[in-house]
Length: 289
Image (tube, rainbow, N blue to C red; front, side):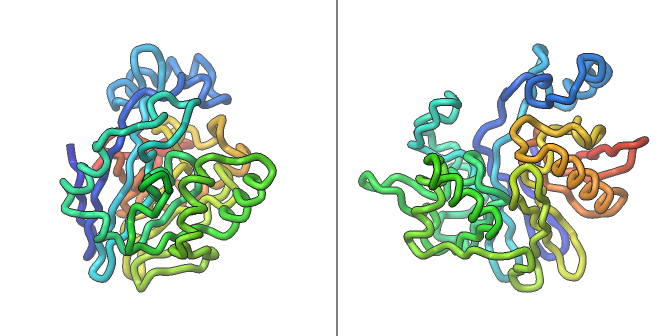
């Protein structure tokens, strides 16, 4: 399994926390019909994206990007010791898989300069914090944590009405520790990293592009969860806040990067998760690297 990619003058490392079954395809993608699923079942199973019971297989992972100047972690996965009763595989986890993966890639928590979250859902903020003597503290003590302002404001408002546990245990403690930067869509880190607003899954969802003067790599977050959504960009998933907007954003993103050399680093596609986007009929395909 390839966990390291080099492009331009930076390296990309995959840090996998879980790669496992998630939800039945017909439940997760409400617009999917049994007929379309049947047409695509064989290649989906071959790609490791669907099991023999038609349940989607997803990878839950972070990416660490090493540029000439910074070490940047994108999406901090699920985390340990977090009460997630609706997701048994995530609930009160205590394994060392994630930190071992980080170490195997050659990084310690002290090496991370920036933590960037494409959005603030539970499986993208988990390792933002760790439990220390009963308190949630930032896992990466030297890092600046980058949160999109639209996204942060949306969850701040939502959390004020009804507590959102991941926001309370994995985002607010970072703010309280004064390690957060709430940024807008024109934010950049040096000449390597830019934000690409990609709303729909959540109001402030953002992709991140890397490369000098051009996009050598893009980190798409939850713009798409399954390779099936590249073939059929109109297939939005049940957790998209605005399914129509998500479909429009997804097609625009795929059009932008199709038939280019840009590496598309997906959050949840099965391994190897990194691909180049190519046109296929009225849709697209992600050709694994």
